[in-house]
Amino acid sequence: MRTFLPLTLLPLLAATWVEATPRHVYLTWQGDPTTTVTVNLHTIVADAAEPAALVRYDTLSHGGHWQDYALQATGTCQRLLDLPGRTVHRVPLTDLQPGRVYWFVAGDSMGGFTAERAFRTIPDGHEALRFVAAGDMGVAEKSRRLQAVAAAQEPLFALLGGDLAYTNGDWNLAPIWDTWLDNWQELMVTPSGLTVPMVSAIGNHEVAGGYHGTAENAPIYLQYLAQNDAASYYVRRVGPRLVIFLLDSGHLASHGGQQAEWLAQQLAANAEVPVRLATYHVPLFPGFRLPSGHYSKAGRKHWQPLFDRFRLLAAFENHDHIFKRTHPIRGKHIDPQGTIYLGDGSFGRGPRVVDGPRQTHLHRRWYLDQLRSEGHLWRVDVEADRVVFAAVNQEGHVFDRVTRPIPDADGSNAGASHEIWLP
Image (cartoon, rainbow, N blue to C red; front, side):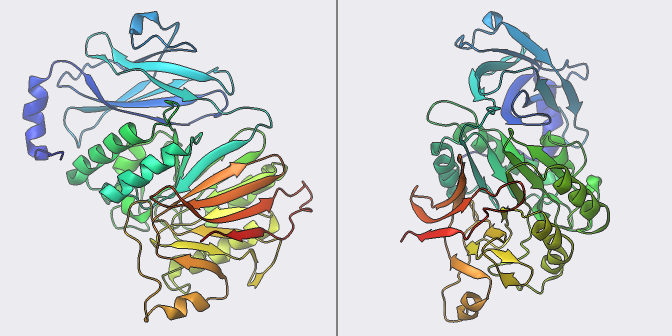
C-alpha cells in the first residue's frame, strides 16, 4: 500500500533531491492524433532553474538506452507554486507517421530517463479503430481492475468522462492524483506494450464547488492534462472517420451561450465526418438521478436539439455510477435514427443500486432500454460500415452490446439500431 507524507513536508524533501527524477509518464493529445502526441511527465526537484524535460524517441526500440534514439523533442515545463518542488513537463511530438508504433524515454541526462515506453499513432485511412470510454474513477481497487480490463481490449485511446481522481480542485489532495497517475502509468498499457493516451472531459469532482467555477477552481486537472489549455470543452478529430466533442456540463462553462454556439459551429464544420460522438459528465437522460435535475435539463435544452439536427450517433454520459443504455432518441421520442445515450460512469466508483424495491420506478423511464448496477467500461469499434458499442464488466465479460450502422453524409442509412442483449 502506498503512503503519503503531508504536503507541508514536501519543501524539506525537495531540498534533499538534486536530480529531477521523473515520476509520472502519461500521454495526451493537443494536436492531430494521426501525427502528434504529447508526452506528460512530472519531476520533483528543488532547483528553480530545472530545464524542460527531453523526450528521445524512434520507430525502433532501443531498450531504454537514451543515446540511441534517433529523434528528440523538448517542450514546456511549469513549476507548481501550490505543490513545492513539483514541475509538470509537456513535450509535444510532431510530424509523426500515422498508424506507426514509436518507442520513447523521457527525462534528462542529469536526473535520468524513464523506462522505455511505446505508443501508436492513429491511422489516417479507413482502418478499423478501437477505443474505450468510461468515467467516474477514483483510486480504489475497483478502478484498478477496470483499468486493467480496459487496457486488455487493446484500445488506441481512452475517452474519459470526468471525475477522475475526486480531489475537487484541492491541492491538499494532490497525493490522490499521484496515486491516480501511478495507476494509469502502470495499468493502462496494452498486452502488446502500448501506453494508452487519454482524452478527457471535465467533471464536477475536478472543480472546487463542482459547478459554475473558473479555471482557478480546477487547477490540478487543467495543469496536469495537456489537452486544450484552459478551455474546458473542445473537439478531437481522430482520423478521417471519427470526431468526438468533449463538453463541459456546467462545471467551468454553462451549457448554453458561448459553448452552445461553439458546439453548433463545430458540429456543422464536421458534418461530413461519418461517425460523430460526444462525451460529457452530467447525463441528459440519467439512469439514477432525476431527469428534472438542473444540469440534465440544461443539456436537453441547449445540446440535444444540436445532437438531433446533426444526427449525433451516440453520447457517453457519466455521473450516476450505474450502467445505462437508452433507446435511440430524437426530441422527446424514441426514433430509430436518433442518438443513443450510453453511461452512466462506474469505472471504479461503486455502482448504485437500481434493482431494489425502492428503485422500480427507474426502469419505467420511457427512454431507458437497459439499466443495471454494474461497474463497466464501453469498448467501441469503428468498423467499415458500423460502430459496435460493447459494455465490459470488471471480469472482462461483455454483458451488453448495440450495433449502429454508420449514416451517410446526408443522414440516411442511420437505420434502426440492432441491439443484442448478452446475459
